[in-house]
Image (cartoon, rainbow, N blue to C red; front, side, top):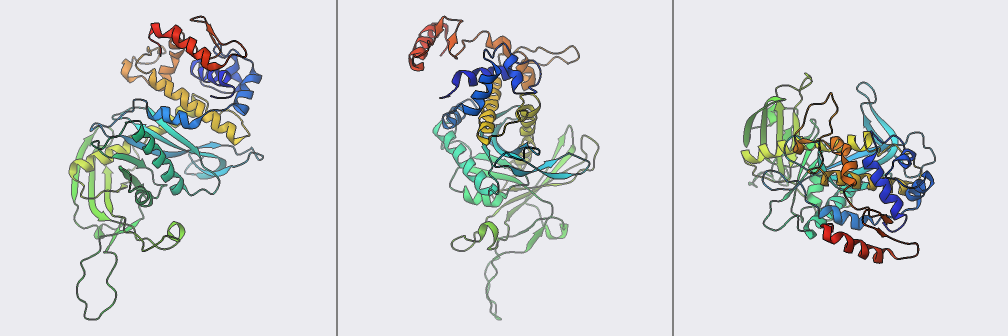
Length: 441
């Protein structure tokens, strides 16, 4: 933080230590952890400066959750900050929203953010957020997502999170992304793309072997059609697995190998140099017996950027896709508890600044996870320490903060202060000298 650093730091503390959800931005100035007035709070949001590149590098260097085989699993999704009544706010886009009415999907003006997070294994509401980008109006979602994933993977490699002997990083996408195109653009990176496809898609099989045709004509470029909605075109599966689950009953996964979309020279491929590529992958159909709410289950179609999938790969992939929904818990925590979309900000840069403060606060909850005590309500069931949700860790964060030095201007706990006019570097050296004997770095 290079400008309004103390106010921004105390604002993040207030987000973590305020009782209950964050309803308004000005309400944070009433928290004891925020020792400034409400004017300083708004000044920090509007005029403060955060070195986002350094923050991104710091997030990539933290301990990250991994799958059972030691693989990094990243989820990418877009969450909107809706601003329908802010007619004077610049850079608003139409955001696709769900659940604002019975079976209604609406386009509401707002600021959409593309967020990348590392997923854990098993049932959990924790994720490790690694990056966030506000999408500009009319942006090419696939191109922006590709550049974002590339930067995240390169930072993970530089931080030592992935080495040559490690399994490839799995990136999980929802149905709104062009998974084959993203896989083609990232083919030089050690990543695998797993994306959901609509149930009305039509893919093609591998190019058939060339045979002599006495009639003549150009040899076919694509094989026969694979129509998701027509079982007669499916043929024999490459792998089939049946797994008994607690919530969905029997989960049956079928996999077909070497299927690709038929590309045409329009839209994203209009200016592609050379012949259009054939992006082969594995299609997985997941069907379950029932849903937890009793609704009618519909099959889920997945496309994996690799081929020759085994039964173990099929099981690992569809379970990794179900873990993608953990990022929805993170979005709900951001909006309903940490107050991500509560402020009525006008400047998009201020919105970015506030969004990264919320991400930093969530990261501190992740780091404090093994230290927090379960301060449960009388009506809540006891939870083991390793199973606490982010909201329950936040309840005890004020007690943890009291045991750590304050890194803003005055460190009253250890008698270190930064007088006016004294550079922060010299004060930081004094802080390190005071805290090093206590094990604080």
